[in-house]
Length: 113
Image (cartoon, rainbow, N blue to C red; front, side, top):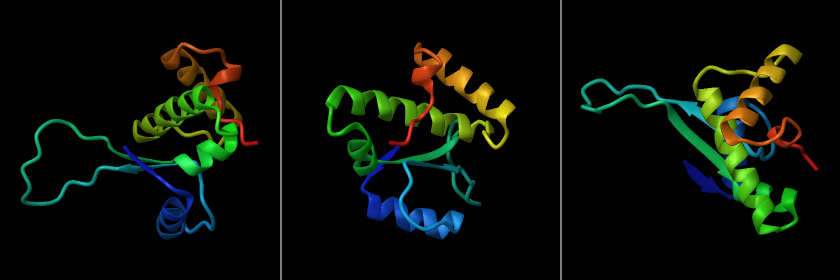
């Protein structure tokens, strides 16, 4: 996991998704490099903008901790193939996030302020 600022994640968002501006979390699936000897299964990388988290949470430390946990879980689910493009996919992802983080459904979705 990489924690970064908005400028860094905005560069990644533009380069890999073709979208302008920062986002809260990005997930990158692991791609094996021929000739390397990597042991164990690797899912990929998760990048979280702490600047976005801080802005969203108004600097409240406990809220920021919750948001980072939620974003990390969200990123892992993406690496495992979970999407949220449809209402059904979103309900499934929210349910998994709530279950894995032991929070309510309402607390399990990233609310953009």
